[in-house]
Amino acid sequence: MSLSRRALIGAGLALAACNRPEASQAQDSGWRPDPRLIENPPSLKSLVRFPVGVAVQAGFLDDPAYAALAGRQFSQLTPEWELKMEYTVLPDGRFRFDRADRIAAFAQARGQRLWGHTLVWYANIPDAFQNLDESRAGFGQAFDNYITAAVGRYRGTASGWDVINEPITDSGGQLRDCLWSRKLGQVDYMRRALDVAHAADPNAPLLINDYDLETKPEKLNAYLRLVDRLLKAGAPLGGLGCQTHISAGLPDGAMAATLGQLAQFGLPIHVSELDVSLVAGRGAPVNRAVAEVRQAQVYRSVVDAFMSLPENQRLGLTLWGLRDTDSWLKREDVSDAPLLFDGSGSPKPAFAAVAGALQGQ
Ligand code: XIL
Image 1 (tube, rainbow, N blue to C red):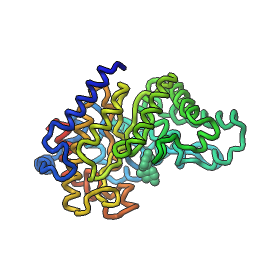
Image 2 (cartoon, protein in one colour):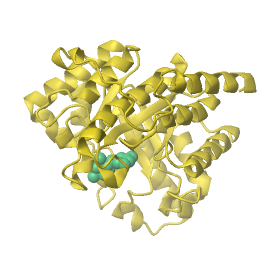
Image 3 (cartoon, rainbow, N blue to C red):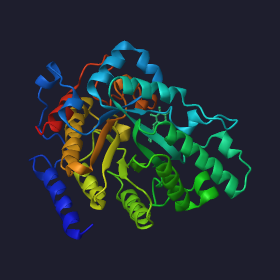
Image 4 (cartoon, helix red, strand yellow):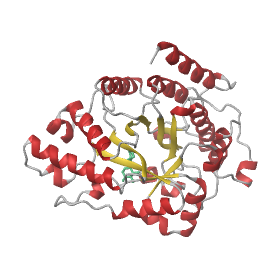
């Protein structure tokens, strides 16, 4: 892509970050969300053309209140863990997709899309692969078979896939060493996974997906180098996933700067796992009342930055959970409340911030 396009996008996003007086402040900007958006909450998915998603678990869908809220607000569902190898690959090597099928059926019945999360992850090494005492060819065949089975099963249902999840180290800007890289080669396993997934569903955007891109420049730069390397190698990379597990301490310009960097390749971008922690240990203001105000402001800054992308690069915006009580972050700190709806399913100021920003308010 020419520098001029790159410069234009970067400038546009930088401007977006600065077109609000509070942009440079990392503290309370004084802005508050419109309370009418809490009193009379719109359906988020009805406000924009791109998918607004939420991570769900099959078992939650049996709760009528949960199902109604997820169905009303969101247009895409990401299995939080039931389409990962930790569930789908049995110790004897057989596959099971029953729970992902449940989520897919729920989505299809409501005209929602399914997001395929995730095929290959350093953190998910099932026994069946760990114990596979095969040659590289045999291991590779098993690797290919899994990807083909999963992607092929949801061909036409899944709107896209996180093919490689979290390939970059937390520090040092390196590619992670994992069973996949050791058995099949560092970047080779990624290229292979993308090629096999593309063969199984040529129409599905295939992404890499990582976190802390907003707060760790070294990690972002390593991610950008990997994207460049995969594209130059001709890999069928169809988009970039930015997980965006952030805190209420995120400075307002950080997301715009990150998306400005990611946008340089012209690929669609998925803000794929958005939550904004209120916990000081994750970087939020210590004072809870301040953190809650900042949480809404940070949600607004994220959506503003996403809306500043060119329309063809807005692949989707996904929340990593429906209600605060559903959040994975609560396992680490039960006081955390990182999402848009409280435990009773009522919209929070964070919801109003997102709804307002999706409407350009
Ligand atoms: C987490 C889920 O939320 C948990 O329920 C599960 O136990 C572990 O995985 N980045 C990712 C997600 O890509 O798959 C992780 O989800 C959170 C971090």
